[in-house]
Amino acid sequence: MHALEKAWIAIGITALAVFLIILGYAGFKDGLHPAGGLRTIDPTKVSQTPPFDKPGLVTNADGTYDVNIVAQAFSFSPSKIQIPVNKTVHFNITSKDIVHSFTIVKTNVNMEIVPGNINEKSYTFKETGDYLVICNEYCGAGHQLMKMDIEVVK
Ligand code: CUA
Image (cartoon, rainbow, N blue to C red; front, top):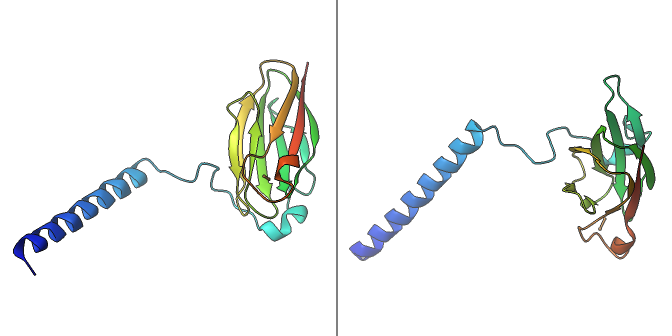
């Protein structure tokens, strides 16, 4: 092998090693983790696992709300929900089958729903009205029918 080829291979390997070391160091230093959180669930037992055995709105003792939602091809459960305006709502969502998304139109709530994970996001609705939730992750023949309605009320 030509000496220059050897030199370039060495430079390439060194650059890759430096890149991986920097990436690994930054990841561990900042405690990076999957965007949805670290809580997991057995996707085959979603209907038996609290809180997803009773999907819907839950009022917490501190005045905040939890909304527990199950996604599956091609629906969300519950399919319609009422949420009070100007209250912090914590969405916990999981999937029974494949990857979906939970996208509340006209907000910055846009999560991938990964089976086996409990995907989380807090949000406060500032205005009353009807909000449409869609799935923007292609999940099969009924993907375009997969939606949920949120009514934000006083
Ligand atoms: Cu669920 Cu597309």
